[in-house]
Length: 257
Ligand code: NAI
Image 1 (tube, protein in one colour):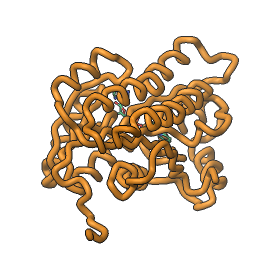
Image 2 (cartoon, protein in one colour):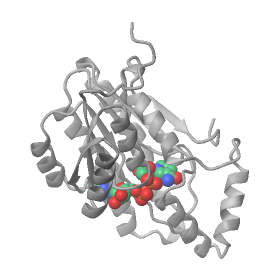
Image 3 (cartoon, protein in one colour):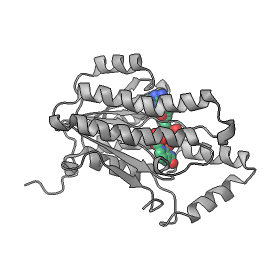
Image 4 (tube, helix red, strand yellow):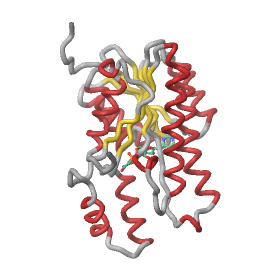
């Protein structure tokens, strides 16, 4: 019997998309800290390279890769380079803001292309690269379950992530491959900081006040850290979650219960 190994990914290879910064980077760091070789993939080549270099500098095993998850050809060529991986984390995502009645078709399509299509394509790649018994984790959002004023396209895209996660989980279960989602609440990352400033500008409110109002509605009384999402993603990716599939785990300080 192995009790509580802190190194759940020794001898495993992991692919994390959108790993150049924010939550994806924290997931890459966590998996590497637990022994994985991590492929740090991002559409931003410089961010991916910096993150992989930083991981190696602290003794981790990592390489960088450039990929646009909304582009099937880009993901397919990454897949050809990689060979087998044991864990895939579909984290890359973007958000835009605007009142529903002014939301453009271009913004709708752009966000759905990265978040919904990107997750679908990354899971398709996972189905090709993962061995039987491998696991995949997607990154949804609590906004998948809520009305999302000023970002309807984002909420729809994340609902698609939850739904796609469940279907892949069902279709890949006969191979013992598990597919689960984490659904973060308000996490401090570059994306969330940009969102706060953009929303503040749109509704003519001070971003600091907006953040304080938001925090006041979170039961645990604070925003989350990327590392806290990474801990949940690592759990779902690991053998500790061996009987969990098709699940969405909220990481949101009780914002949604
Ligand atoms: P971020 O903007 O800080 O980082 C996202 C990373 O994804 C960046 O490095 C970016 O270059 C990369 N990326 C963007 N488009 C890409 C593409 N087409 N292909 C490959 N890489 C791409 O965002 P953050 O906050 O770290 O978000 C990560 C995930 O967590 C996203 O899916 C986001 O929707 C989700 N999330 C974040 C929350 C938050 O409060 N920060 C809350 C709920 C969900």
